[in-house]
Length: 307
Image (tube, helix red, strand yellow):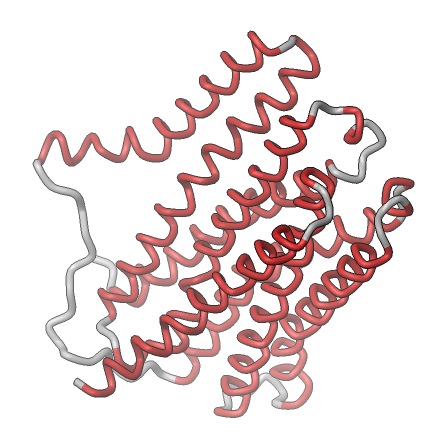
């Protein structure tokens, strides 16, 4: 039977698979607003595209959340608790992902076949995703009467992780965040070269530039621990390698939150107009990952330390 540490590593690798698909869909919703025909779409389709971006933003936030939770809460939580959090975050992320697939299926189908076939294809895509991601997984519960859950550790505290294992785990965690940040940065660069970008208000262009810059610095920071480990530490598993890596990764996550919220403002503005409520909503979309990625784990760690 696999240890909880190995199960945690496997779970993070599975999240890496999910995050790649999530970021591609997120990038599609961003890239769509800069296409020449986007302005010709009916208003409700533009709004649906913005809703799809919001859904995928929520999915990405959930998929990245276990990374900071593991780093900030590790010493004050049971191993099983960390794995349960990761499993719950991944399962939660799949729900908005499924609805985004349905919306995108409708957007494409509407352009080709019209509303009738678009609705049918969207519902089928949604049901297929829900069945594959949730329905099949409920079969063990129906047959055994319970869902498989991580076994809680009998120890009140998790075991101290060897430094070598922590550094390896850090690399896995960075690979959860990095591909999404790189994909987002690529879509942001390509958007600047589109004709539609010139039609944005100067404030929106400045917001996009800020989001692009935040994503670029995020990518740089996420790549920095590998360079530090190899160049500064000569490949040795030293304490400063782990410390530098954690600080760089968490800082990069905060900047990624800025980039995601900034682009959400662009998508919302293109669909609904440039207004104060849109700006407020974009700010709230930044605060959500900050609370989930940093606020909740910090409170959890303090609560665990007090026990």
